[in-house]
Image: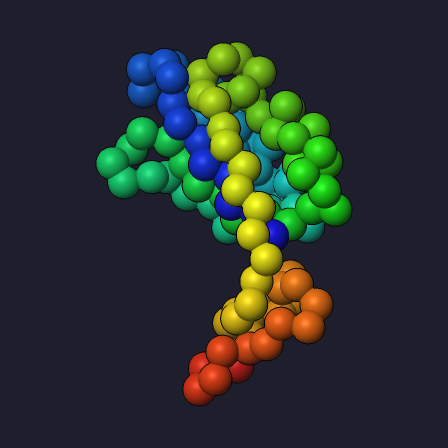
Length: 107
């Protein structure tokens, strides 16, 4: 599993002008089963994406198509991590042989 941290490097006006294209990119990645959650940082200095991908290289390739990256509006960092505990809702995405946290309802 991966956490992608986006940091804006241009003013919010430029970010907002590219937002429609960025959201279309996000939606394509959700449809492809790569992105699990995304949203703005607080304060609004960038964004965060939770993702799954076969490899870090695959995810770098995917991120190279983000309009924010293509247009030089943001930079990104990918943090890979291995789950050891997870919520039942994340079971399909968790690393093999990890377990659901105890006492957490399935829904």
